[in-house]
Image (cartoon, rainbow over all chains, first blue to last red):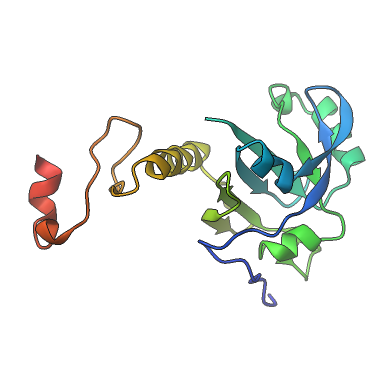
Length: 56
Length: 131
């Protein structure tokens, strides 16, 4: 497998990013913004996984 | 303590919609499902697998100041333990308030014994945990 180590390090500030989302709470598409989390003083847990319609 | 969980895969938002609405195992899911089809976000967090175009199983805890405080990455065939992720999240929230303390390995929830690292504890961790 090729190198998958990113440049982010623990203890460093995560660069701002936005991400398109599907919001089950409303059934609509939306946007997630890290800057918005910081503006509203909220913690964030990002949970990456390989693929929809698979298992585990 | 305000916290948002966001799941992310390289699937598009349309696939997320289809999966969420189809798979009964996801009926209780109310958190946003993020799409990273370009792999840019996965690359930024070091979970991009170039050989498959998919994201590895990475969990990241970010505080309200935007600092990365926790990371765990597993390979495809090993699912993460959500209880452990929540334990680490709760520990981080607690430690953000109690900056002179540390959560030992058996710490599970607020109220459990913590340690206060310092010169007095050097060589005496056993006694400190017993108090």
